[in-house]
Length: 410
Image 1 (spheres, rainbow, N blue to C red):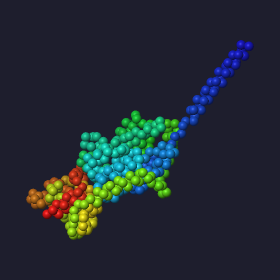
Image 2: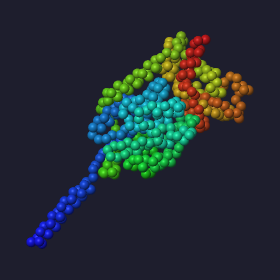
Image 3: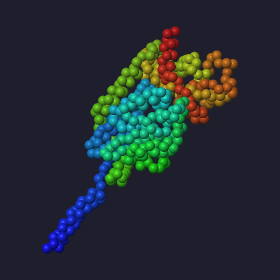
Image 4: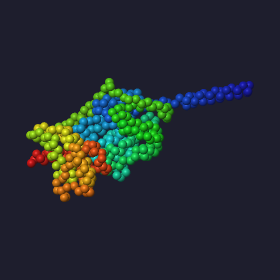
């Protein structure tokens, strides 16, 4: 009798253990499967930005979504010059972008303005390889986004060091691979998955990131990520079409409001003219006025691509002045030897104007002078050295407005 009872006890113990083992084993062999959608947008129109916001909202009903902007909002010249980057930031915010890659073009408005844009933004502006002269990052070097139980570390790097605005005095470009690895060391202690985002159209070979993301310059890429447990098991990349997607009404309304507010500034009057102002007349007036302000010793420009349009008689508005110039932004001020400056004026369509009262009345071959020009001119003449350039305090169209107003009072 005792032996039978003992056998029954052992059988019960064995069956109970088997049930527990089976339950535990079932949890181990069937880990949870989670999905995440990552959108990376390149250069995008304001209309498509509102459509993209609609697509993101629809996808969020199915699974977690991250939207990273690797390009710019394509705006016309007036909106860019008059808002100095703020319109772009506000539109990305309204659309619900989680983070964006820092735009080097903002440095055309000066480092101080770029810093202000980043500080004011209600989204992360990422770049890990751009420092100021104190070694402090110009933009946010990284961010961590928590989704579910996982942390996603995200950073961005600029690849092309030859972009002209990166030569603005006070900015230091750091090798992208070196900076990317340095930031990765920090992210590994804070995040489970680490992502590097590159500007639209760029590529970079850098190891140890879980993902390196980018897209075409005017494309939108979708990365569908599948996680099994805590491991990334699959990545599917597709190109997104916004055809048939309706703009998100509240985003479209906000973008329209931003555009209308800048257009109101564009319609503000500068001065009334009774005659047409031809391109050559406006060019001479503005160049002479800038030299009289003693901003630079001389001014070099392309006579066929400085002032583009004739200004008709009537009230001249700020928007008309912006549109009249090929490059209405801040002037670039660089230091060149007289010999190099003199060689420039022998090229087709290149004009050189020298400030009155310059010592000896001419440019000395070995003397270094302050030269004013535009970003557009420098892009057309890559042979000109542009390391550590300065920018004028104000934009070209603003100087033009003051010069025309001063002339009208005489």
